[in-house]
Image (cartoon, rainbow, N blue to C red; front, side):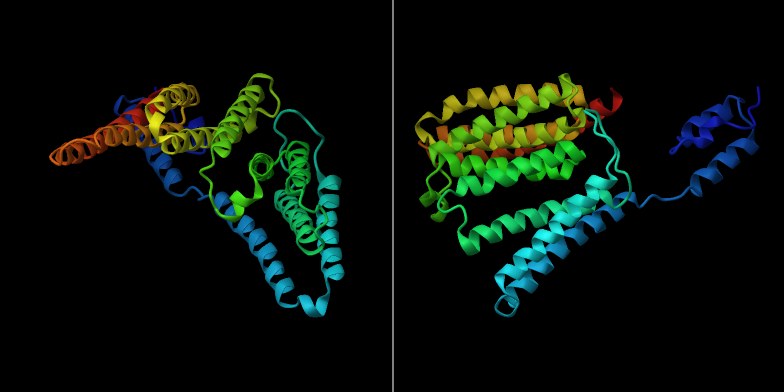
Length: 336
């Protein structure tokens, strides 16, 4: 049977090998195969993500440039004028987004136009600039630095859900981490850059569990289910970093931290298989490797000098094994 026209031509990507096998089995003609190869070579190249990256970079450069301009001309412009300008710019962005947004839904909502996401991002960044400027210049919140991070955190979470924006959700989660850090840690620790405090470690564990739970609820309850990956990504990294920090900080009990570390590796391994995410496989492999290697080297620190050669052999062998493991997992995820 000869097939002159194929509906496969309308697909965004084509596997030429499939059509060559069809040709070898005399299911399509040579003319059709040639037409398919020409169409595949002549298809348009998408620059969608490149344009998005340029636009996001433009928003960041604009906000940074405004900050530099204000800093260099602060004496001639005046604080009230600067605050008023930032407030008007932020309010104008939010007004535009409110007027142009699509109806709210707990599922994914597409952007109404190509500029919506970037205007919303600019509005949120200028809002953060306004609150930070207000605190830095007029000490509006006094020594209650947690309040200065709590207010923008609430606004960012609201905007992320109300306008359905993953970038704003990432900003909100970052502010949540900053607010928890100010809430549980004395200000002196931040001033001295001493982030090995035990309270910060356990706060990080609690935050990681909370974000992982939010990812689970988003997927199960269908509350913005496309937010699940962002929550899970932040939760995974925060949990692993906090667990490794606990292993390094509580040096006398570092072996006990292998238990939660192993549990995290197992949990996120199952998540990675279910989501077919090689990124999660890569991250849990790196974090798990650091924890196991630290425990092994630390337990051999009292041994004779010759043990160093065994440690070097371990790192070489484990690196090779890790590469083989990642290659096989990548193939496994692609074939699922």
